[in-house]
Amino acid sequence: MEQRHGRHTPAFLLLALAKAPAYGSMLAKQLEEELPFCFSDSAIVYRSLKEMEKNELVSATWETRDSGNPIKWYSITEKGINALIEMADDIKKRHDNFHYFLSQYELIK
Image (cartoon, rainbow, N blue to C red; front, side):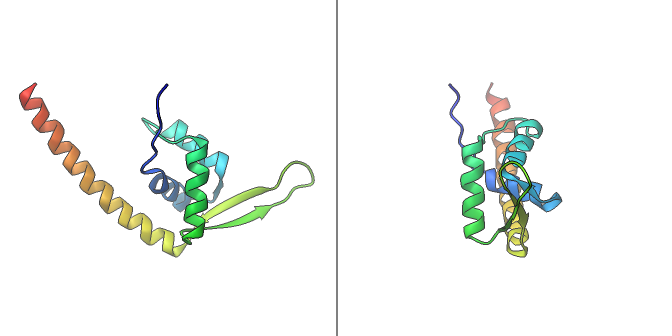
């Protein structure tokens, strides 16, 4: 069984929330469908959202309906936008290092 790590799950969640508010299962499904390799499961998504809410990167509101369970909607905050910018810079640096690694690996194959 493949083990999931989801190291960059918060970055992907903030990216999605920068586009539009969403709820947890919506975000988990979006990551599963849109990422080339999704390393996040719903447990990782919900833990990340809880931690980001605690750190004020996202805010949450509850939507109640006449039937069914209430839904917790998440939105990115100004602090979350700043964190997203920092995460994007970090990911770009890692991308550049991975590109270097792969180019050097090709030389020894």
